[in-house]
Amino acid sequence: MNYLPMVDPEIKDLIAKEEQRQKETLSFIPSENYASQAVLEALGSGLTNKYSEGYPNKRYYQGQKYIDAIESLCLERAKALFNVPFANVQPYSGSPANAAVYFGLLAPGDTIMGLSLKSGGHLTHGVPNITFSGKFFQSVQYDVGEDGFLHYDEIEKLALKHKPRMIIAGITHYPRQLDFERFAAIARKVDAFLLADISHIVSLIIAGVHPSPFVQAHVVTTTTHKTLRGPRGAIIMVTQKGLEKDPLMGEKINKAVFPGLQGGPHDQVTAAIAVALQEASKPQFKRYGLQIAKNAKALADSLLCCGLKLMSDGTDNHVMVVDLRQQNILGNTVAEGLEEAGIVANRNAVPFDPNPPFYPSGLRLGTPAATSRGLGLKEMKLIGGWIADIVCDLSRVKHEMGIVFDQEKKRETRSIIIGKTRKINEIRPKVAKLCRAFPLKKQY
Ligand SMILES: *Cc1c(COP(=O)(O)O)cnc(C)c1O
Image 1 (cartoon, helix red, strand yellow):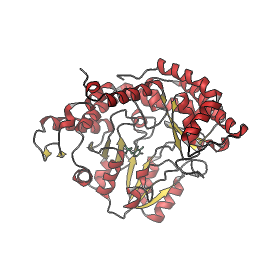
Image 2: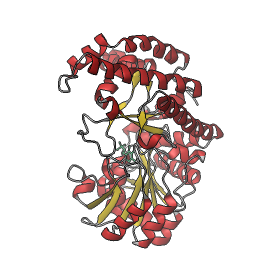
Image 3: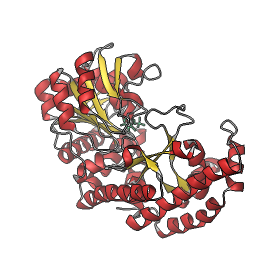
Image 4: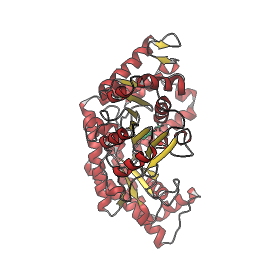
């Protein structure tokens, strides 16, 4: 019996439409994925009715028998999968997880050092002025070089100069592997905490196709809804090395999450994270992580073959950034054009981007979601060609026809894109066919 159509047909209709959109388009947004039916069922359960401030066996409310069992199981699974002595599964999402680590281990005004947004870091890694991480803490940001790669000697120099209390190693669009060993050596030199934020690369680490930070870092955070394919949430973990540095690190983090930053945990999410961890501990999940990386390489090769420029000229993880400066077209225009063809991606800054973040020079593409649908190397090659065709067609329309895409009037841009670009109309049915051939899965 479904009640939603009866109780709230308006919302039911919008949900149905969004689910249809997900079926009929290909997501190349690297932070998106498709949760299994089992994860969705845990999320949609009666657990949402419960209040359980505190931690298992230490709650401020009664009636916790089953909630305690669920959270304990989730914690055990996290500790077993990542081989760590401590975990906290209560953060509402990735940003509050990072906030809890900073507030738990640092004092306001301490210096943190993370990768800048333009170079592929996250907002919570110390972006100045507009984020809590840049307001409550002294923030030093490191960048990639002109070649699009991190240069660890430069990072070390910066660390020696500013003596951060915490170094953050984590990415949202940096398309290369992180050298956690080198980060740890730098952190050791300045006696800093090393936080590895593996939100984007957690599945690659599980699959063994990206170096693991679990030996080198003191603390590891990850979202659970990106490559881990679970519900929206996050996990904070303290490693053996972290406990050696400060035996109270786990307790400090627990206190920072609750009561420091949050109230009651989202128990339905905790249950769904437990389900996702169960799925991620299976051998097929390792194959999934491996395939994400293979697909990314195939997509990158295809784009490069078609003459597009990529940040750092390729990828060795799951993500790539197309640098559109040589086509002289903005990332938002290309993202809108691709959406018209059924390929959903996001605008993105490139390193040293002369343009503002909302009208940036790049396009970010990632393969985790498409890989969940079962798309493989052959499809990546095809799609890379389609994306390149659309980029070139938009660029041609802009330059040959002298049309300037009006950044402010989105509607107008859209009508130009639809009206003048032949390629998009050609590619749309091909994308639709691929979506039908690779439907969303209920189970992995
Ligand atoms: C996505 C992400 C976050 C934040 O997660 P939200 O759930 O969006 O708050 C933090 N760090 C990294 C590296 C991320 O990719």
